[in-house]
Image (cartoon, rainbow, N blue to C red; front, side, top):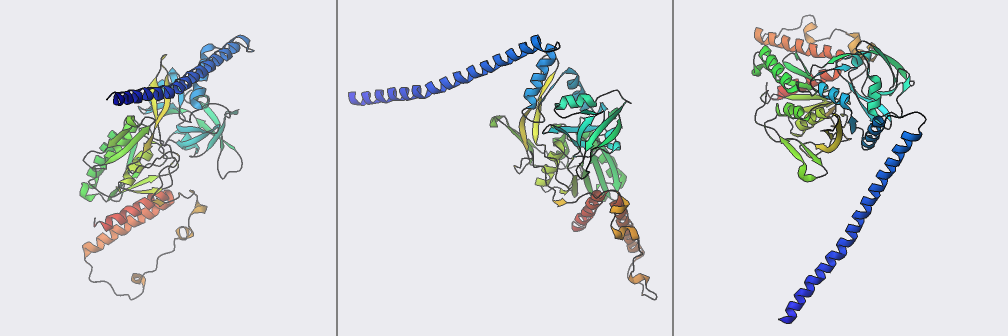
Length: 444
């Protein structure tokens, strides 16, 4: 018995020694890391004091510290940044749907300012700014080497004032200038139109108004068509939509889903991840859908496209989306400023990460240049179609009733209307063609 107790005590003692042997190096490593951090902070303090006392001109201490904070955040990724009080207020105003500026969503890549997308019906949109453009200078001042907030500051100015941006565009050999007149940007989150028996919902951004606008306009369009039974389908146009509020993207996705996951977020700590699920109820009661995306569709718009695609609720048409799949948390700081910090990544219901990959369309459709030279030859010659009915002495079909003939004529007019759209918006016309095919398959 004494041997047994001795063995147990020896085991406990041995375990204690082993634990101590492991804990020692870990504590030492942690102490070394802390000392290194304090040394680096001391280095920062030394540099700060040297600048204050020896720089060629007097430097403002607050501006130096703000620049240091911004540099620290900008070194992480293009979307983390410091927002001084005025910028923080501007951001909160933007989510409410009205602000002053050019109407352009930008990011920074390898030191260059890149356009994610111009916002519909804004000065940048009308000036011809395109997704993917690189802005190299503002009013002759180079943007190379500036942080994103510094570049944004250069673009700001009084409403009605002119700004000249220098643009480098893929496929164009030389940089060129665009003149833009600054204006108050009032974003209309959703625009609705009816093409035949199809409702087209153009969603331009995800701000506080988006879901309410979409639900009310969809209800009005359904009533205009004579009820849900008359609706052939819906096109959800998310092209050049730069994103916005996560909860609005979830609400818009939920509007067309009955059940299942919409999006999940995962950060450093897996326990803090979130999953958002759909609730029962589909605003269009299962009618077929097409979602339109392109390279200017980012963030929240990619969440919607990915959710509807993964649930086979919609056919996604167009071009691969932008690929911004990161979550930025807005953290208020002392002094009325805020920090925008990347804290998680988005995942679609099937577990796909959008980050840097985007959403790939089910059917790739490129938008051709809008010019007469680019139009297909068969659409420019407009020769009359030769048919049996046009032949002299052809037999008439006596089997068809007047009602059936009128229905055929209406269907032909609808098809011609879609054909007309191809010269205005090829991608949208393609989406309408797909919806007509889906409706025919479902017997609608």
